[in-house]
Length: 167
Ligand SMILES: O=C(O)CCC(=O)C(=O)O
Ligand SMILES: [Fe+2]
Image (cartoon, rainbow, N blue to C red):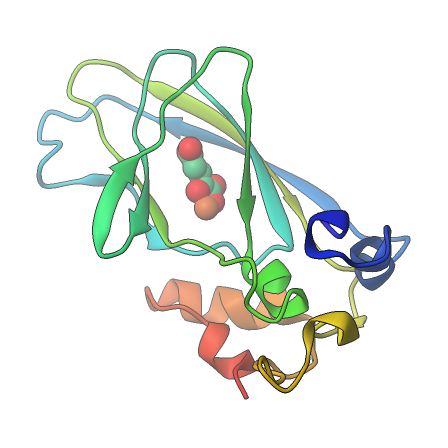
């Protein structure tokens, strides 16, 4: 990711820190008789650095909000999906976006997914990489620490936390 932005390899890893935790969530979505009324997972953006998702083979449901429209993410066998979280949006000064996503429910089939959240070390300050700040793209995000905790507070209320980090 760093190389794709012409940055020094490992610069994001340095921001995550050597003790950066990986947390796993197993999601189970039972079949739902009224899928048009009930979501599997409400719209949210992840508060992680980034998230790696293994989707159920053959049962779609994950959707990403793109230009105001919900787009279904195909479930490909053996594929891992990498979703940017708010903290990569901050570290890349907005070059990478943390997408709002949700999960639909399914009237016939259960669905399982495994999400691995990679988050900067507790207490470690992160911020936009120097190499991504210039006159054309001034610093758009403040340096923050323990952003994931701030994120959860807003998540409970069904809103995003990213505005807290915006300059
Ligand atoms: O079930 C999925 O495919 C996505 C899960 C998700 O977005 C999450 O756990 O934050
Ligand atoms: Fe998510």
